[in-house]
Length: 226
Image 1 (cartoon, one colour):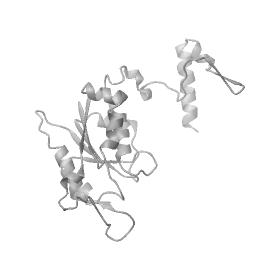
Image 2 (image 1 turned 180 degrees about the horizontal axis):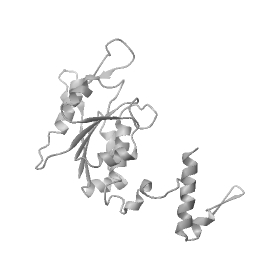
Image 3 (image 1 turned 90 degrees about the vertical axis):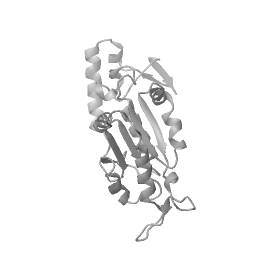
Image 4 (image 1 turned 180 degrees about the vertical axis):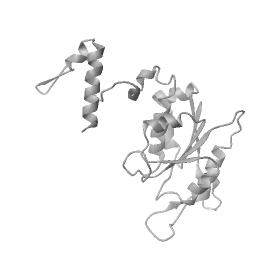
């Protein structure tokens, strides 16, 4: 079982998604576990502040380093009978894009900590301190900049979980492990819409799996080139 730890100020923003559908079933069947640690629980000031103005000037606020690091340390502090392989994921828009190969790599770990920044980001010293706790990998998820790291974190949990044996029922359900065009179809065979008819490609109705695979491979290759 993989344990995902989300270091976030807003666990309620994540749990609705991570407790639904396939991910929710994976949690119930103990294929994965999801836990949260909030940096707010590790602040030492009387106001409960987790952010401060940036040195050198600039807009917005920056999350302070130590509450984040302490939250990660707490997440990784679980006692376990066997040695654990742990990894910390740090998000950065300038980092390498997260891929399916990275999802396969993360699926081999016992503990994956996903550090969700907010505001203008996290004090850069936090990343250096985290390396004293476990290896750190930096990823970008998508080419957009998000309000916080929660969406990228949930994307990674989703991408990794669906690759685990038994989560999707059949290994063939993992699209990238089979020949699959991005276009899929189901009943009815013909759809009428505003005076036009839209039909399923005939080859998909033949039952000839060799031709169907060739068609899907061709469509997939064509779309990758556009």
